[in-house]
Image (cartoon, rainbow, N blue to C red; front, side):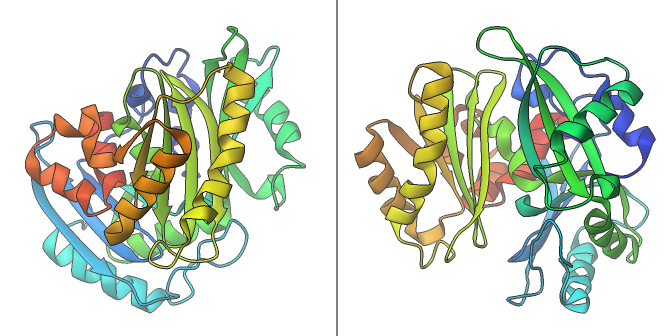
Length: 329
């Protein structure tokens, strides 16, 4: 959704976004490097997209030892930095990144996302920022003076002003940037992985995305061009051991909030990150909600892509593809 890097010149384009008509325009005002790197609790991956939209030039994925990345909004994330550096080095050997501008995707728990109602909000960033920080002060587990904040405006169901706000602790963001920089990488955009994947969703009606990465589950509802619900929760286990009931228990509050706010149910559900057990979760969600439930690779946006790009989605690398769909190449 937004650049979270600490450089004011990279945040400024985001502040200028005034009208968002489609999800894939959330990133249009930002730099869009063809190289995108993801550091996740389970792996490090890099993709270089070609000049032709959707053409995959090169890709590399390297698994991480368990516990190398412990995603947190407040604590040290890279608990085994040498393991992460080694994986990055291997990835960059196959997808060269030295000195090349790149987009860096990081775990969802690092970035807190809020949808805040406002009667009015100044257009100038220096006037809006104090109001946003004041509203967020009691909602985040860290000192707001240590944060990076980005935002965009959207119209709510009744044309009321809503501000989608992403906030992260600056020190945590720098952990990820610095390890990439230590290998010659040039990070120009930082984004959470689920936000990067959203442009793969359908543009019509309401879609619930249920996305697993490690033990983190994101439950996100989008309606047309609106982000309506965003929840990221640490689950008791990863998808390989998780009980489908635990997933249902987590998505019910998101669905209830959406129904109360918009007065309707979601039209479909899309799943990502459930691996070999996806069919078990798909069946459980479909039985409970009685709506179309499918994997991310089956969305209308995904089906329009070349086969190599769709294969990345099948391999749960949807965030890397979502970045490209946003206009990254």
